[in-house]
Image (cartoon, rainbow, N blue to C red):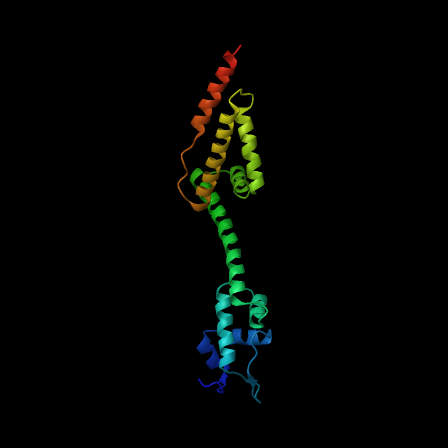
Amino acid sequence: MDDDTLLPIGAVARRTGLTVKTIRFYADRGIVAPSAIGPNGFRRYDSDAIARLELVRTLRALGLDLDTVRQVLARERTVPEVAAAHADALDLQIRILRQRRAVLRAVAQRASDTEEMNTMHRLATLTDAERRRIIHDFVDDAFGGVDANPELVELLRATVRVERYWRLVAAVNGWPAPQELAGIFDWFTAASRTVSATRP
């Protein structure tokens, strides 16, 4: 098509894969205006306008909103810039979806009731600070009142944190759960309490 050739909206629709209604919508919203409007009111588009419509189609297919598309067309933002921002947003959405999937699969496998499902959902959406606090409280409950080597207790605290971290990673990514270390903690707690009780 020559740069001077103006195509009617039907031909533009066939060329771009957009519907006539969508092309009219973009024109009415000021996103891609027709290159010319004939005396009969018919809209006509040149090669530049068609290229802009194809860019809009691609950006919309990638999930970008109309305001962002308009900014790209107005050269207020670059395509790489909005692509990077949108990719970051998708990363967050993917993490959230993985968390939801992990909770739903756990509910399905365990035949959980509503209360347990709510608990799992809250655990899956904890912030890092909240997760650290719960792990700290758990360790305090597990080893409370135990007279043990502080370095060994700290090592076990770190082990708990690592195990909890990998359990969460496995749940979010749908991997098999790592082996539980609960037996080691039970043994250590019982042994430490026994030693404490036999000391003078």
